[in-house]
Image 1 (tube, rainbow, N blue to C red):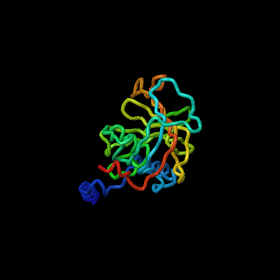
Image 2 (image 1 turned 135 degrees about the horizontal axis):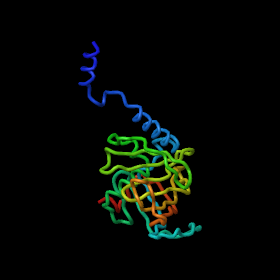
Image 3 (image 1 turned 60 degrees about the vertical axis):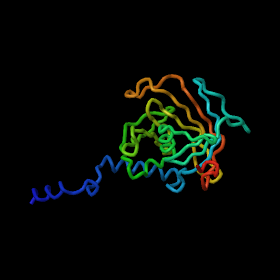
Length: 215
């Protein structure tokens, strides 16, 4: 009887088998992250943002009231990014924004697994690795206490998020991002100086794509 049961089990499709403990843990963590963000309906999807983006290894002073942007973008999560009216065609940028929105965690093709904790800005953070829906693995780290996104490791860079704010309709987003190249990706060591930073001055949700970008 045991042999028959094992033989039957071996012919079941993988999707019908129970999730492993590790997979269940990763899914549970993802659910808590999205819950902390206000639920899936509160995740960013289509939006415009004004920002001060700088390629500099020296952190710039905090933004001041009424500071002017040097870039305005429109993003359709998981698909497109326009800077002004020019569409960016770099897949890396698209994936980063998809991860930043957290919607990547709910894509049907995404495979999630837990990865070892790290510290981001001296605060403990737990990690989730996403594969399946992306060409190269992408690692997302979340603050242990708030469950907010703390960092993303992708390719040769760690993007560190901070200074959380709310859009007019109540969506939470990190208004400051600093990118650090890896000294050694496998060891998780970073170069001592950042290579870019961006400060979001304003973020606005859009109900539809602006007409000038529909082409």
